[in-house]
Length: 348
Image (tube, rainbow, N blue to C red; front, side, top):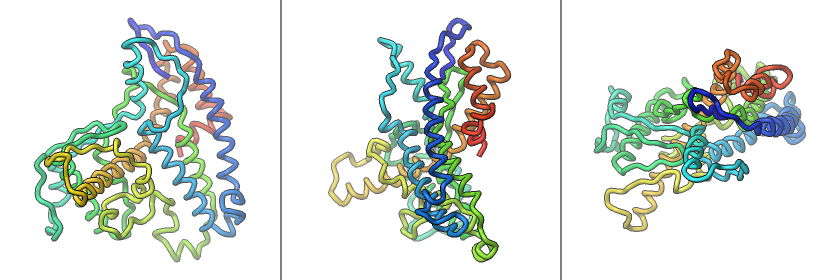
């Protein structure tokens, strides 16, 4: 749904959202049957009799959905929608509007590293101070950086990993780079908005089903710090030094990372030896998968929140000039019985 403004008036908009709503409902119904059926999800074991098996089954659903979210955020593997595009230069503007759903930027300052590392003893593998002090990069579907910027990010990742390790089981690890990501989005200024988030709502349905599983008192007392954790998102990081710098989600989505997701301009030029080439690929994939993990975790809250905010704006007539199309979407989104498949899952 795009707010088309021309001379203070909103132009005619297509009603293709009706088809999207129908598709979302069909998908939601099929996924509800899968997630709510312990026999189907856990291979025949009921959720009450075997909660750990059910947890692993839901974890597999989590993993599949999170991988698809990565592809959606990076606009990879998308099907042709068949939406007619206007000719000439107008098409470029519309493509830019479509990309507003995935727009994001990465910001990092060396002062953040100094504050995070304050009071910590230098380690044997500490790296020299990077040549740059500030990073501000667009990372909507890909990111391009210099080797100096890459070094700054690697140092920040190392310090954040050390800070997490010092908490040793007393904290739940958040998204690496979570505080560095910005996702500017303003529908009232003309950015595209979509009420259709089937992947996010399927994940919310899985989460609800997982929370409905009865956990015995013996298991809760025997593992007070782990029984409530979510599969995949709250898994422990690998003991490997490289993987310990990343959120556990990064290991899951690493196979989906493409070379185009992160391009590095190396100071020594593109020509290098085979060992050096492997080192370069490992460094770029480490940062690329960390960025992707941060984008996914940020999106789990950001995109549903956009829908909730837009629904309230429409109800309060901020989109009155869009006519019945916007009003109809908001009505179906927030009114029973369809709200159970849309708004209620966004609140989860």
